Length: 197
Image 1: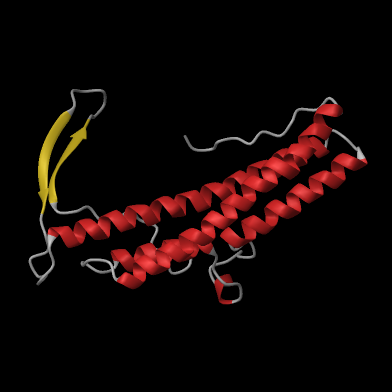
Image 2: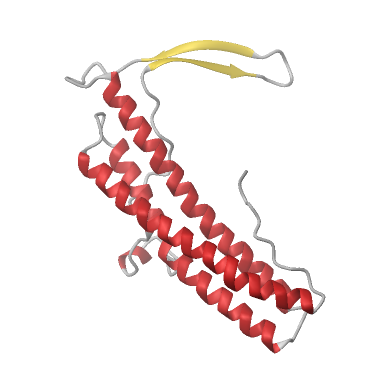
């Protein structure tokens, strides 16, 4: 990630409970309080709750983006396995269609050209990184999120929805056709696995 904070949202001030179990012993439970920063002026717990709520939404979208990339790569790996089992030309052609179309989606969600920490200087960040960077901006201020943060989140979220929708179309249409060909050849179809429950 470039310009992104790979940490979860900051907890809202309030009372929390921690529970620990060590070496199979009896669980130990303690309550503790997180207070508001006493140096803040004009910031309320409601402001920080609003920041937390938006941060959770952004975090969830980052997860969705990353899960979509994992799914694309899982399908590509399964395709490679099936291609090792057959030299059927029609299967090879359809596999290439699936790979290409899913690759387009992956490249919009994740910058596939990045190999080192400096590569984002040459290749722009994509949706997952933009969302993660937005999370850092929202979390970077102990205050209510700005209207602009909400606007950017809505825009990035809509773009992610478009890519996930496109991925679903490719899986249904192109992968569906590939699976028909694989079954015809007596090979296992490629699974559209749900990677996170």
